[in-house]
Length: 83
Length: 178
Image 1 (cartoon, one colour):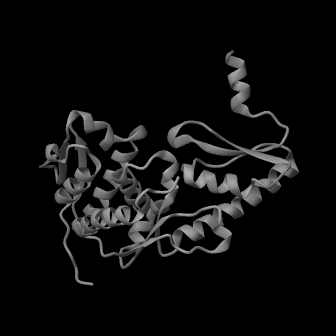
Image 2 (cartoon, rainbow over the protein chains, first blue to last red; image 1 turned 45 degrees about the vertical axis):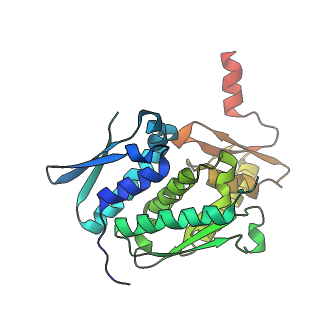
C-alpha cells in the first residue's frame, strides 16, 4: 500500500455532499488560526439538521473523522458549521 | 424490514468510503459483503451489509472504543437515509473488533445478572449506544427472574438490570410527577 496524503477539506466536502439534499449548496472554506486549520462548512438551510444530526451526533462524527485526517496530515483541524 | 436494494446500497457505501479513505489519508482497505454468513451465536443480529476494514490504520479506527469506526459507520448510515430500525442492517467492523465487543458485552451481562440475583438491587451499566444496549438486552432476554430497561437521554442513556418484580427508577419518578 503506498503512502497517500489526504485532503481534509475535500474530505469534508465529499462527506457533506453525500449527507445533504442539496449537494450543490455545500461549500467549505479554510482559515488558518493559531496553527489550527478551521474548516467552515456552509449548507442549505434545510440541510442544517442533516449535518448536525440527532443531539449533534452527525456533527460529532464529522469532527472525529476530521481529527483522524488531521492526525494523518499532522495538522489540527476544527469544524465550524455556519448557520 | 430489509433494505430495498442491497446491491445499490453497497455500491453507494463503496463510493462513499472510497472518498473517505483517500481524502482522510487513511491506510485502510475494506471489503463490503452483502448478506454475509455469520456464526450461529450471532443469529439475533443479521446485518445485510457488512463492511470490514483492515490495514495499517486499524489501530486509529479502534482507538477510544472504536470512535472513528463508529463515526464512519454513522455517516454511511445517514448517507443512505435508512430509517431507525434499519440501522442494524448495516455493520462496520475492523479486525474483528465487533465480534470481540459483543463477547465482552455478553460477559458483562452475565456478571451483572449474577450481581442482581445476589444483591436483589438493580445494576446500572455505563452509558452505551443503542446497538450495544440491544446486545445486553438480548443477552438477558431469557432470564425469567430479571428484566432490563434503558434509562436517561441521548449520550447518557444506559441500561439497567432489575429483579423481575422490582419497580424501575424511571417509572417511579414518572409516577411522582403525576
